[in-house]
Image: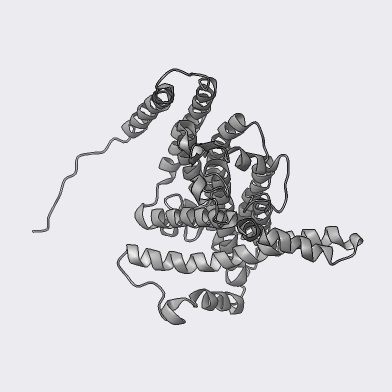
Length: 397
């Protein structure tokens, strides 16, 4: 019974495919893998927008949306209707074709990235041997979409915002990928399915998630920081710094095109959060063996919801960084720490055969020192560059 509930979507797909002639079955199978992505994640986007606005209202001690529908739950519908009916204004000197294609070019890589994430047992739309490599390859296309939006608008603020966004995304892609390299080293596979299966082994009643290792814990933190920057989430939302460059590369976008950019950013957030779950949080596996009766897809989307709520919490808590702080963090802290974490992962692997009493504690201490000492040194060196003058308070007479 538990197995049937866990595999209900897989069984339903096989049944539907079996109703068609053999010549059509491949096409129908592909269609049934694509349609759920196109339905579930835009719906999750709508739910996330209302949850985010209400959560930020609660954090900032103000009301969130509470007028449209019961408790304001229909606010995403109102926002969608507004975007659909709003006038689409294109600047006269703009490149109309590139201006139109930019939001489409942002959404397509996000949807392709979502296609290699395992959402449950036997529930991966595309099972590639190099799924992780495919994820990062298609994700790199978002920089092109951002540049297309900034350049085609023929607006200096748009172009400046696009250049800042590209510099940020390129800078943080490096520690993002290096944080994933440690997982590839230890698992020995670029397959997202293989990485999840490797975390299904047990330490007694506790499953072998990578998060429960020193290199996995450090890699997860580095990955999530870089993911926030890649997704333009606070405190890294500099490309849309309205106090400096209005709305960045979105200045000349309105109506449904702006909504597509908004959708693309959230789809990218879901994709990169799903990859974090796959790499470090056991994918669709339960944290404890006695909870494996809960369907695997419930675990995956529960973890995804928790990470999205974490991003919302950070947005309501942390102030925006300056551009120099952002770049210093990427190149002077994140990059070296990601490289050091690869060394820590190697040390953890080659000390696995220690059999004496307290070997696990010694391995944790050794890896903690190897990672913690550079962390303290780099952090103090980076903070030491900020020379703050003594504050002088003056009051009006």
